[in-house]
Length: 383
Image (tube, rainbow, N blue to C red; front, top):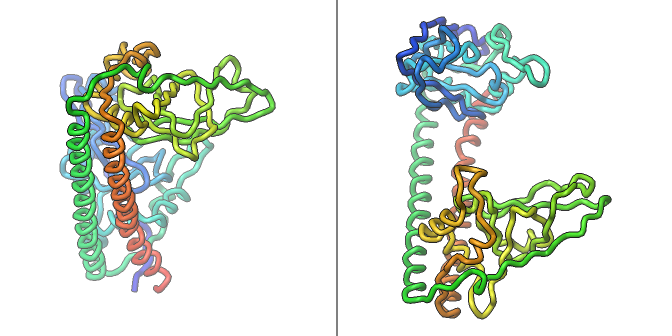
């Protein structure tokens, strides 16, 4: 059975202040949200740090973000972040290993129950919410015996290793699928003529007449070929001078701001009738000439991305914009339509396999949270 103890029984505030030297480089830490641990934020010279002194985090300490503790921003400092500097908004605590095993506490800190505890220990107005250390340290948590802690850690570590193995297998299968598709695509376009997009998939614009009393659901396109997403409705009164264009299912949609990093997608049936601003260009392939999925895949290949990059001059980010005329003049490979249909059938099979893998991946990723709930929440109720 577990006993209930206050956190200050095994966590002690560390006060390892060090002076910041302008000519030395220091690692900095980022605390990821929702119990996902700590990672390297980067390395900076001391001259870039405003404070004269900061905390020096030590491997094995528990570090917590005062600002985002209620969102699960904390973790055990790993060996590779030993000696990293953090501000006083990131207090560090030594763990009494004679009371709680650090790795056991690391697992427990990933539970919704512990995150909720941090939320209850946080106070302040909307923009100034901070975790109160005194309140946090007086919170109570269930704590089994050291032997039981070891058994729990061994069980969770064993399952985590299996989850990692399965996750790696899924990622490897995805890489293999993509490599096979790319090889098949190269075979499909072998010897194919190049033709401009203006002929293969002309630009189609469907201006929307704005009704101030209506609302317009917008469509977005993710970078790196990750498809479309739905934005909130835009009230007609907020459109102002912004021009909107209707998007239809089957359109090849380009986000001209991020086309250079693969923001190209096919509008799906559920996207039909949504709108986009002038930053979204829609092209419709001539049915006897090209298929939309074939063209989408081309613009995800290294060659297609290079062409989009060359047609998007300027600096980084929003300064790189795909020009309308440049898009129309882009040369794309156009093999016989039958060969394109053959490749699209391969894409459909690959998509089905990806869907199965994605569902499997969700089940795999849900395993650890389910076990944490069973062990810690269920165990606490049983006690």
